[in-house]
Image 1 (tube, rainbow, N blue to C red):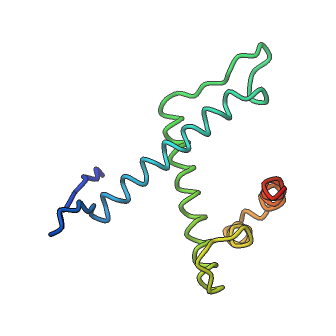
Image 2: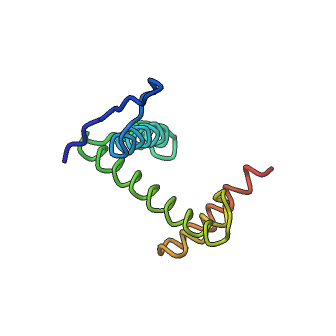
Length: 122
């Protein structure tokens, strides 16, 4: 399904995006961010083959991986946001992400997430 961008001009001359257009633009930004991360991960030494060759993906495979990552991030963010709202918080904290991972069935990721979060605290 194609999403078309619809811009609306308010009385003050400010341009507003329709909700669908704003979501489509956010999806493009998310996909670009995930694409950058994938490129960094694929070029890391831990992913390279025996001869130092970098692993590559077919375009369709890369696009599918990006879509899956964006969907996962969206789902996790939404769940964490609901948890934060239940806690009467306006900001999503690490504990909201870890609880969201657990509630979504990804509890195995929590120890690694906590370890990485601890690295950023120090």
